[in-house]
Image (cartoon, rainbow, N blue to C red; front, top):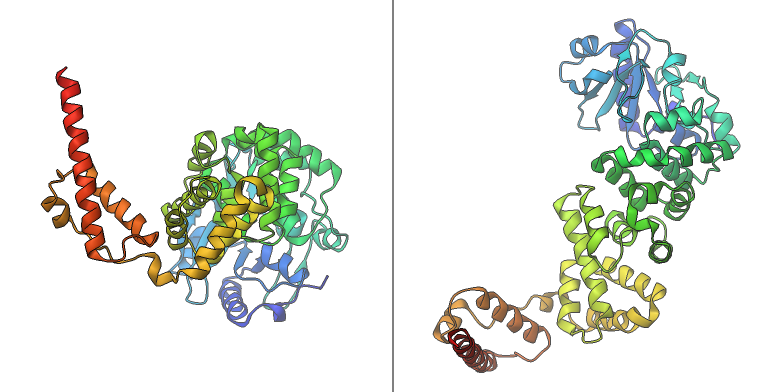
Length: 427
């Protein structure tokens, strides 16, 4: 472990912190870099962003920094935009009760640094560094805990988790990311507070889970969350022990820091439907992330389909980043070799044998061809064009003549089916 020093902050962030602290000092306030950035410095990591704190109220901050944005103004948090990275500047505050399990009912300003530290979640996040003179403040003993490899809460762990149950997920994330040990009393308090996760908004849960999947320490984080009952408290499908075991095995096969979407695909894996799909939807992910997770699930189903076609594998390769698709397929094959092993091998061959440019061939048939073949406009058009693309990907439709011959046969089949259906309805 290292002593946090302003010299170890990346230059652009360091200069911005010094600038902000200088402006606040002219107004009679001492500003501090606080929380994760100082923790990362202590553990030898370069911080990627900065949170700062001071005694300046939101009203004073708006005067001193006209471009400040009051994203969390009611709780004393202002964003100071900058091309080099935004700074989150928060007023030292004390807090009332957390009636909704997320935010304090009230906050009050005019408190000391020590009182501000007492409201924070973990001692490792209650560290303060003055960017102007390098002074370090550690009122909760966070550095000593980090030195011993411990992740402790500030004060009573039961109170911290009851205030905001999202801290259970943060417990797993920080312990996993930094290889910290969670003391027994903290684990017990987390287990007791786990039911509160059901009240936490999907967006907040998704944000924490996404970081767990993207950061190093994923496996350790999931182990802690499973141990304290956080996953089953929030997601009922984790109560199925066999399914939960498969999911944990998939996460282990993927390895640490595999990425947000593939981690979510494993976390909610059950062939991509039913309850797990509903639970995933409750997180209100972005459309892009939800679409990618759906594509991973579809690939998993295709790999296990005894009648799988190369076209379905090539579609997956063009919908997903190829390394991601192969990593996911490899994990499924490792965990479920009997059902996914052969499919994974076929996917790897398809990725090698078919260049990316050939995975989305120009269609040999157009809507005019369907109209000329006598196919009524409707759902059948999309189905036929999709079938045609499958046959192109399978290497069966290599020229327009073959495609037109196939269309003529399919149009005749559809016409016969319509005639039979009409007779059946009349009878």
